[in-house]
Length: 241
Image (tube, rainbow, N blue to C red; front, side, top):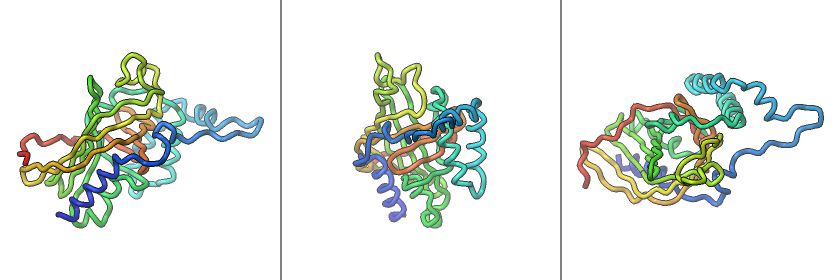
């Protein structure tokens, strides 16, 4: 248990540490020049994905396949990001959990086979809530939910997609990819009915490459994750220590 919690804590802490790389909103892949007479990649994607819902539906099916075709998943993610879909408020309503990931994201570490053999069924995800102060919550469950680790703080959209009058809100004409800054203020671990504070804090950056009510594509310095709506709820019955 101590080993699993230690690894999970390190993963969550790494999730919010600032990297030396460019800010998240500069991480989006830029289109390359196209030979004269040949349609640009963005034009081809636009023509092939006039119905973004079809791409999103295929992505949901692709990440549910066992084993998943990672190359196809990444192709679909690129196409959805390039389509520059408008914002769907339902994508920020409630918790979403990771169903596919690549890179060195905290979620990948938490659900790695070596940890699952020790910690049983695991899951992890995020919950964002827009409001007067935007609230961000990361969660991870081990041992089938017997142990829950959370890290929470506040977030805001970057200037490029923020509302001019309310910098904590997205502009009405904002389109994906959406860049955000996050400041994690603390975390805790809940087990056996008791909750203990964890020293997790720091700034971070992330992008939402695409999102709707059924799927959300999240990218940070650690990699890319595809998330689906989750039934996760914080247990308010635990006692803090």
